Image (cartoon, rainbow, N blue to C red; front, top):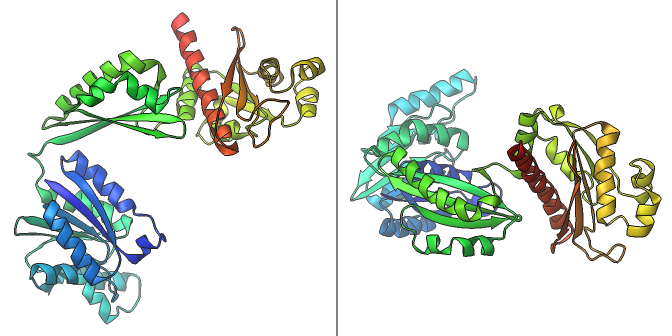
Length: 415
């Protein structure tokens, strides 16, 4: 079954709201083995909606509409569909009673135009709306299935899961199972080169690379009537990928580098502190956005000036004068001294040139990250980034998380 989602509403085209309904429906339809090949957005215009329906009918046998079921004149979805497929709108008494009861419950007078919401396509399977007023509906006609759902997500989502999806009779269809692998420290082109033969010969499962914010993700997707069999297919492909680029794999699905770092610190019961220069507190802000961060984060210092680096964090004057603050030596002292100052197991430091101008003769994007772990030699990683100021700061924090995660993993293996 191939599906198309048509979102109706001029507010979507004007950018006043985001079309989250399409994302939600696509995720759940994929899990049910239904292909979603097209998303369409159309305004509150019957002629343009009719054209969108005609196009969708040529390429999809399931067409799902969201929005345009309300009481006002610009809510024309079911009227336009009824006219297009040559059927009538009839009053659904159960829906009408539900709407009338809603107004009684909120002690408001029900206006006549609200009855319009209880109109449904004649012969359709009505989907109750337990979180609003306008019911949904499903109608099969001439090799097409039309599903109409309300626009507000709080109404659409539970209606689709409880009534809409079961109405499609998808039990015997292939299941689509996906897994997202997250990589850092390797570019999209380099990663693709390592697994190009797997991509070129993919059939089932499929492999889809995507680069974003200095990271690369691979979405693996398998189709099978048995979910466990699909998972096994994904396991086999992931094992091949891992044997080639596993050193850059840091997590799965919607996780992040900081989330993975927080997990490791909690598991190891290790506390961390931070000394931040070019990142201006971004590392600490990101870290403390996670619940329970107080168990692993004790504090930090934003040491933006040389005076703070020397007077608060005890970086030697000699180090600053001889090597500069954008240096391996400064990063090392910052990491070691912040751990000592706040009494933590780990100290991490960030110093460098975010941009837009050079500093101490060092080009924009030159960064040093110091990591001091109790009982281990201090490590300093040098980066040469090529982004703008914002991108350099963001990627610096990510690299700090990435290198610390790797060091913690290596120390675990050594035990």
